[in-house]
Image (cartoon, rainbow, N blue to C red; front, side, top):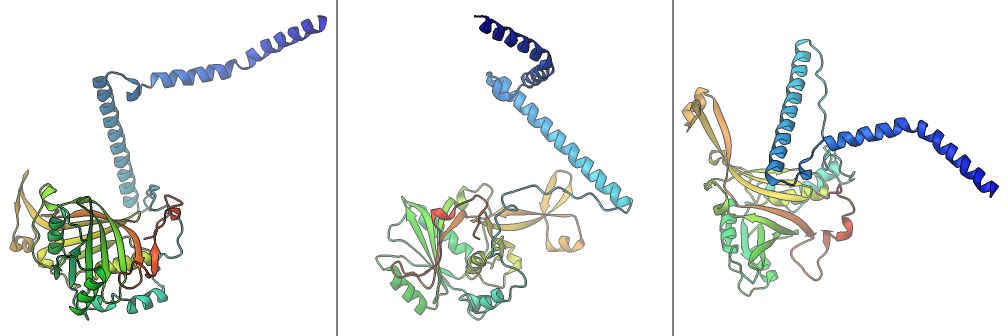
Length: 357
């Protein structure tokens, strides 16, 4: 009994000493808790109207702070230029694109092997101008509701393209027929549940065959304030095709279009690769001049030459869609004995920062 009383007395003494030592830490933790409680977040408010008001205020304050930072940065740069000093370096934001995993197949400007391959690949004759691009467009055996409209707009985008009904013909017979008729490419629009969901692009006569998943299709009629394209040959813009595979896919897209665009038509076709998704856009650019404040009018060529203040803007013509490469096959289409250059598999997606194009 005496030993138990002694242990209890020692425990009480130790607890009394520790209470005085931890008073500062307890005070610090209580102050942080009070600060967190004083900072009211919109998600903590149950009233919907009050919550939206506080959210809009916080959003506005965030914009004001950002504007102040930009003004301070611009003032510092201007001051440094006036003093003849180097302006402070701007911070580069960390994105998934600029922190991508290192890839050995990224094209380099001094890669002689790459240039040798480009000179002798399947697209060199078309891209050098030795053959004029001629494209055949067809569908799968089962048609869709939006398929004919999509094909009609594709014909307006791609010059020298013709549509043939598929019927019951096998795809290999269509490839043979298109080769005899001196077509340089074959595009097959695949549909599923009455909706275009894939594109098969076959280079003729020697391939390759690319299979793309098609998504987020928006036709011209569904684009707000859309423009109507002319029959001029468009300019072509290819962005971010940086690897060997991306270069090959980019050259395949390039071989669908003539290599001498007609600038008078002011048409631009864009294939923009971002995180292995190829975004397709079709625009025409418009030149406008401001006569007075708040009023705009279209200009003529004489006014452009006169050197007036001209504003250029883009007008989308449609269609709009996204492509995702599924496979790239050697030669023309062969579902049984075809040899693949590249084939996407789920186990290849090991990281969000790993890209192939």
